[in-house]
Length: 330
Image (spheres, rainbow, N blue to C red):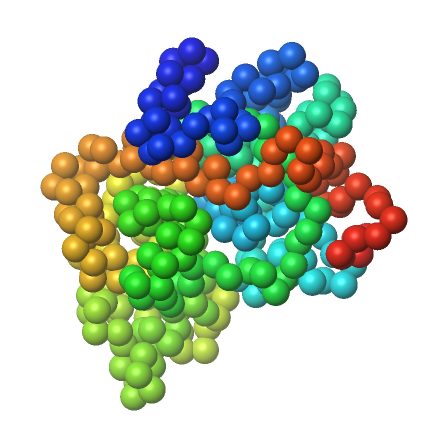
């Protein structure tokens, strides 16, 4: 299986124009230093996600947030004494799953102290969490190092209120393309949001007591039954009926104008993203699992630290002590 994954990864990255060696990551990075790392990560992740399947979406989102701010360096996991780390930014306040990463890190440290980065652990946990709910798996090249900087002010993630042009710009800035945008949006099939993020969209879109005309009226009526005008906390499934099962149903929902966010609905405004959605609907998502796997591999290479850069944390929430640091951590 390892050989098969390695061949698949080399083929994928050669198509994408990415050299694994140049990036400093490879599948057997811990072969001699910590040969059981993936087995340990898988075991602990399964323990948590099998008991609480909604953690799959939470852990996938945690990895995405990490990679989109300063790159895949585990900086989203850091805590700050002054509450000015990434996890304290408004878009990050609803992040969950930190306890899973901490539990995995603790188990790995017992076996291989000071060897495996939190950035690599988070990448593996996200992959394994999705596989627990029968989602696709993908090869995770390893060798990332942990960043020492985490700033709330630098959190500038793709917004659920963004239109297609802004979304594409955000993905392009990370070396990802339009296909990656629509494919990774498919991860919303297991997503959970809340009424606060859609309240204006369904009750007062233009300030005249109306709803977003890009939405299916029947879908709006269902949402209003769940979300009252002043309700900002009730959870809402992003792809109703699919929250515990990773599949391509999200694209059917978007095609029917039942995207929960503006960022979902606006995928119909671009010829390339709309074409992908139409293709998945017509083929019952035949290529989506592989497409998602490919895009997740690319995401895992965003602005990584390797070699002598960064560090290997002993605890994922805290940097190693140094005399002077950009942030003060507890």
